[in-house]
Length: 186
Image (cartoon, rainbow, N blue to C red; front, top):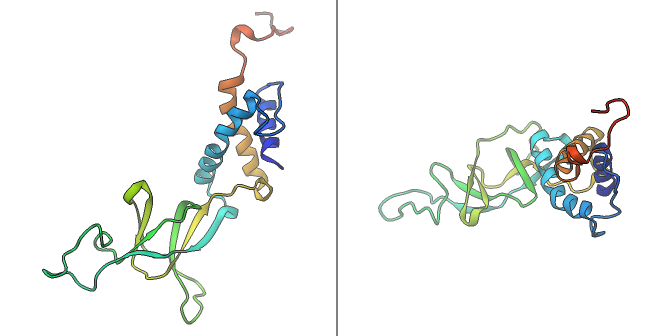
């Protein structure tokens, strides 16, 4: 299923007669749908956290705490991670919701890795960073999943319903423009 098919289903639910052929066909429906598509998709991914959108992503250290703090090596926020954390990692761009930080297997496989403590904070230039105590962890997170072909049917239905609610605000006829119903003349 293509994204345009999902938008057309949402337009059908609200009773809008015009359909889109592509997000780029220039119609008002396509322009509005294109503007709300990614925001709606990501909001649903964050809210539902589906299993098929989970991925394990290895993290790279961006800041390391010094071996010790004293008068010669004072703690500086620009150089070191927040106390008491030993490492700071940049949150991967594809990550929407960080779920767990796990140790990476170095010599022997870890059959049942236990999640480690971590914290998410806003770093410089308004990006998210993760704080933890492992030098090379793996982050389990919900990632941007752009291809509707791999979405499960229940998520597609949620997407259609969410889009229909948003599209209804824009394209639903006003009460005075509605055609009179034969069964209800008032």
